[in-house]
Image (cartoon, rainbow, N blue to C red; front, side, top):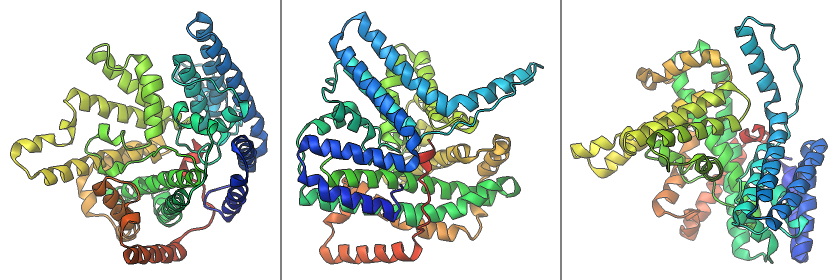
Length: 474
């Protein structure tokens, strides 16, 4: 059941109609059953895995809380984290590890492994696994109390607006919302509906139309000259942004209409002035998770420059691998980690033209240059991320690095610019006003005109073929 289908909105209308008639625990039980139904619409066979994971972590969380501060608590944490990683590794990385082992054996002149398992990836497993791990670690650290009610915890794991593609909510931010009374109000309904519709617009009007451009370009990239490669990188940069942030906006809007607050996963990432700044704005929930549950436990920046660089690089490589069992994700993670290390080594933002300050350029011009150069580095990373055939990567990267390609972009640039202009205008308005949904502050007549234009574009250009969101595969 996709957010961009009529089936989902009928389902949500039914949930929203019954939800306010119940008290808190009844609401939680009703939302849990609705979440399991939502998940079963993808593949009912994996409900058992979700139930097993939730039940195990609820019992282990309680055991950790009872023995906090003892060696036994550490063993319970290790058991929970180990089980979650086994589940994730079995379904997501089994074939990848077999193929890597076969390639290694072949390179040594030995017979490669002769078997291949057709393992189906349960949708959302990366997201709800990380969510469960954060809960277990937070209980151990004493940052959140163990959930006394299994229904509250199960809903924390399986809450349907965000369980498939995030955001990965911290346990101390979402679990307390499950445990307190909630009331629907008109302001939440209005702003939540506005946010969800904007997310849906980004998905069906912008992202899915850009996919028509990017898919053939990347599928046949080895036959193209640099111009189309620059176009493909630019189009995919906005396709993945509108696709993923569109999902997040719908998730947050739907949750808000029911009285829940989910964290913002994106804060105008293409206005970032450095790669470090970009990762404070892009997929914020994953960046935060990696920082708190991987980078800091590795030592963070507390053990000297050399280990800080190692920790940064390793964190980003593992973050890349989190996206999927393919070498291009590992390469993309290594590329991002290398840029973060280089920025830190060079003193922060020097990598993105901070040296222009010494040449007396107007501050806003310097900001534009920083944004432009950072965006160029990000687009190069998106080529690594998108290209599944690693044998073509060198040619694609070389083509993108040819600056003449920006001058030779084909006529396909025009529809890309038409599609991304509304997005950039709305993002720029929010960015300059430093508030979300700044359009709600516009004068009524102007807001009505913009809504009519949006509805016209939605009906005229919207693609309603039930295209899955990109991050569902992760």
